[in-house]
Image 1 (cartoon, helix red, strand yellow):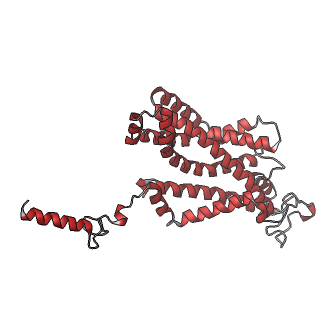
Image 2 (cartoon, one colour):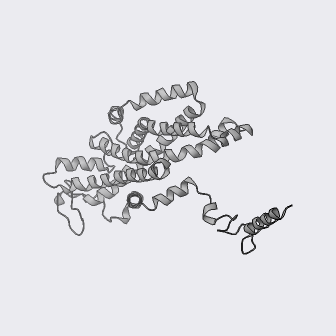
Length: 322
């Protein structure tokens, strides 16, 4: 070995060890920087962006607030929403009722708080059922392709062409039972059956992209079957975009349930619903506008919170928007 090669080898070895004598000392030539060498995941980058956005924290706090109202309404009001006295009809705000009373003498604020449960229950279960249908259809269409993709894509196009509210009105007109459980189940089923198409398209696109990746090819070479590849390797990659879409859809489902109840074909008494209270407040708006404004504000803030939260998560997880 020449003198030049000997000096170069000794310098490289010293650089790898660093001044402390330890191999790979940080911030030294030949070493690995702690920050530069730390792997960064998509979720980590998304969280780094989300925590800097005020709109994310505002929408998250609103979602947690309304979720708490739905779960434990007694923490937000001590009044009974079913305690209605006609003598208090359209009475103004007082210490016992901060927003006064409605046409039937019920506490307007208490009814708005207790109405959160039915709206969030319908929205959450509709979004959950929608997600199951979308994952099954989207994964089958994207993974197998060919005639399976062609048939399922045409089914998606057909369902997508059906107006959600119009079809829901037609179908719910056939529900003759006044049972709260039956009507809630019927609304959830109708909204999910008619509202899964957008999420299915998102899942299908994610599956088509994921199945071309090297880790899928490696799993197939190791003998993994289609079921294992779809469940263990492709599903985790297709789930995140679907969750974002379903978060936005949840707000739309809450608005759809209120619209159906407003039209008189959704939830009915004794179930408390924002749509029912808005309809009653509309009729008696000239006597008092507060019974109309309170449930309308609750509904608008809830829908807006879920849509803003979904938009913030979508922007954080989409590298093209960062």
